[in-house]
Image 1: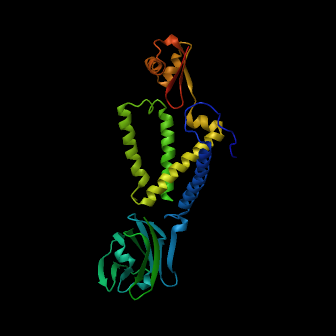
Image 2: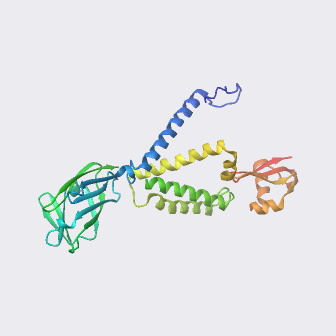
Length: 172
Length: 146
């Protein structure tokens, strides 16, 4: 719906330039559309927290599942939910092994429940959680903060058990 | 998603709160009003950003606020009713030199303020020189001399 009206020819002292103004309006319309697309994408989770961002590694069959955010943001909290089958615990202890980017690029301020112990293994850390003997699923939540942007690849596994790779894109 | 929802919530709350507070509140700002505005900004900022200080979050919050603002302006342009509800309507406060006392009280405008606007904008000296004084939607008073 282009406006075809001409500016009145007059002796008013302005820098009116209808051509430039129309181009500006056109650019603004395009910009609004981009705004709308970005907001909808953000609602869907393309920039973290939302359906598009929800990801899961592992499977019920392997006994280990990791729910995480596909998209995270630099220095902003992101959760990893680790669900493990009780049968994968050894000596009433679940040992979660983190390696890869999880070590250098993720700050791990806390876990829920708190780890009962930590240990070192080659290129990885071990978080140990005592368990009781009831059958079922064990859930550990890692509260992490990415320290580096870009693609992070980390491995989350259990001692003497399955390990899965998670990939997380970290926005600045 | 959180960033967008937070921005939408803040926008709506501020819109409603400022509409309820009335238009004389932040136009004709005194220095105290200015300080108040800064404090409101500070309080809002926490809620807007949460614990997430990433560029992406700031960017999304800004884009969302601007997108709602553009959307609202388009809505107001197309719907007279929306415009009247969101922006309010002008009010005539002085009619041919006669101050409409009841309306001025409701609008929280004193006669002295109308006279000040008359002096400032039109160089008028007395109430009877004013044809109309109108409290505009923006919160300012415009004066039409006789």
